[in-house]
Image 1 (cartoon, helix red, strand yellow):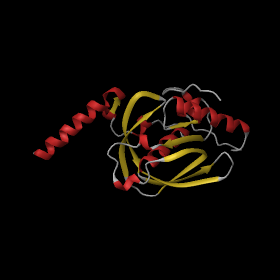
Image 2 (cartoon, helix red, strand yellow):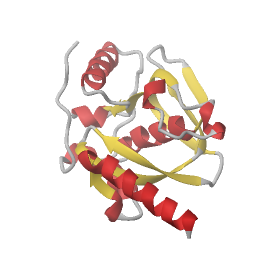
Image 3 (cartoon, one colour):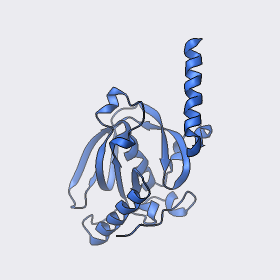
Image 4 (tube, one colour):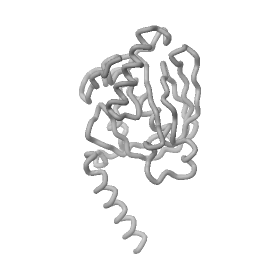
Length: 192
């Protein structure tokens, strides 16, 4: 296993559509996934797509451990803010509800920044595992956000392209200040 170099925004591999994987059980796919897992863990990421490590194949890995759950998670989302490490090959997403929710996202290919990104709140995703068997799961909330973010990489899309207002693209170091300012605005609004 090896820690791989992560492509950054601007590299052409991140803007092209990735190729389907012919054989999910192939040894080279298993080796790629092992390296991707090691790379994601080393970078403290919630997910990683093969194009991010310069391999234009339709492979993603993701996890949503409890410590990654967003602060102030609501009850409707609470049951589904975690998901075990998942390997998904040739994934497909089916949106179940038109509702979208805006949330903060970061990306290993866009280091040091966070952005407010609208995402669908409920979906089903399908794909294959390393054993070639079909994986199908329903996802909501943060779980659904992570899946959409990683699968976007397979279509050459980075999260800033999904943002509705680039004024909401900020440095990670300013997140606390931004949240404090928003809380103060909300308090003033409630007091008025």
